Length: 192
Length: 212
Image 1 (cartoon, chains in turn cyan, green):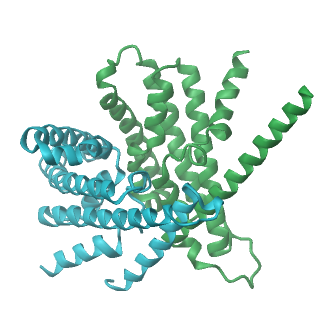
Image 2: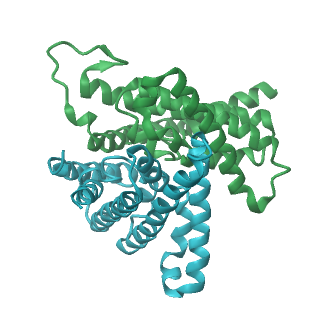
Image 3: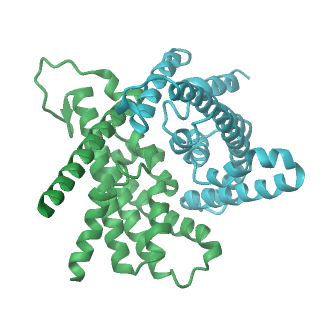
């Protein structure tokens, strides 16, 4: 139980995927102009990352290791994730129209979100068991959602303020992210 | 004539459409692997290898791969070359493999490689595609090495592991922190944008001067 709590705090705050591990930067910078869309992206990523952690764990323990195919890890994981995203999209379309409309546009983008493949690879490298993998996947995704929603709110506020011209666009966004990451570093004393 | 065109394609990747500075692709490895110049260079060259070979294979298969399933096909081709380079680095450069960690397998989802497969290799013959992969890869390597050099020199006072700042220099730790990655890339982009604008203006003025 204690161990799980450590994983959750570690992944959400201390080793936040975006702010300290640089995973999922593309959507973080690309889909963060509005808080609403950022939240939608965060929810879609949480959904996929949790399921992907479960399935990649199963594939690795039941398929790759017994068959001595560990070197196929990268190929197997990315195919599983791509297939998973497709399945999630089809199932959502049938099961829940409203959720599909909310997450729909973000789903295809998730295949190339390195946070999803990153969490699968990290789970395998850390040697987490099934429960730990799923918890780690979900909390890392929550950390991603937290970061992207905060960042989007800051950018919404910045959009209406009078910034110097050279801060417009990408350089300004990156420096904002840097300051935010500095704040997240304050959490690093929480666990050792 | 053909050599000239290939040269143009390569230069386009390094300068005109530099993936990091101009197209803003592949940001995750750029930020994560830019703490030391040597790892930046290693990462860049690994990505170049994957880019050149995946561009070549995708270009060779471009008439065979059906349009509808091209993305899964790209994924398999790219993942194959990533696995090859991952195993090679693990076998011959174990220390490099330890520093680059999961970012080597993560080249699979690097948007630069996807973007070039989709935008260039799928539409162009093999030789041009190799040139494009080489140019884009070198452009990425150059951007990564520049950013990593700045962060390493300011953050530790060394460059490729050699002490180059005077002994009395106190390293600025923030350049090595994750937050430093964001801030220094932001500042570097500012400089690059300003330089691009300056050169474009000079080019325009020169052209106008010639007409007049």
